Length: 170
Image 1: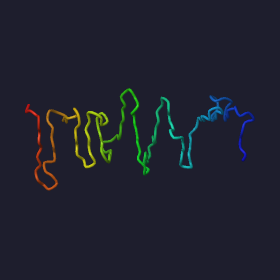
Image 2: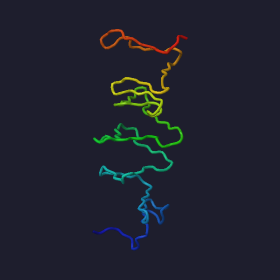
Image 3: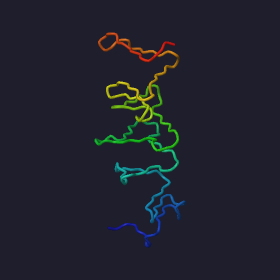
Image 4: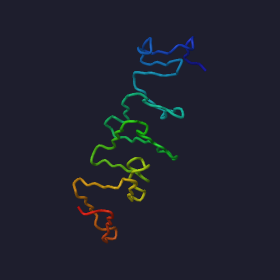
């Protein structure tokens, strides 16, 4: 096999300049780190990393699909079980926004815990759509003093019953 190799294996490779900061493309011999000023285009389809691969592991903004075209962004769509963690390691509040229009749709399949992550105080929607409150998570608050339920009949057209326990009329 033949290839491009420096006469001294400790020399870095610089393209477009004579130092790491001036070069438009640089490969550091001691670390294998690669730095570039331009875009990275992957035509083969895969970027393969180690068991843990960090991307944008510094204070930065990481955009996926920031241009004005329709696309699909798939995360964890294989057949194995995936754990997808978003903002789980910080000591400050995370702000996670999904959707941007009143017509946006968010589909969540399976059991969903909302609150403290399902440890003490939370609400659970199970796979059939039932809502359960756990711990001190026991309040549904309407926009005003009143709360309205708008489906007064069940699937067979019969009235259904709402039972309220432990409440007082105010």
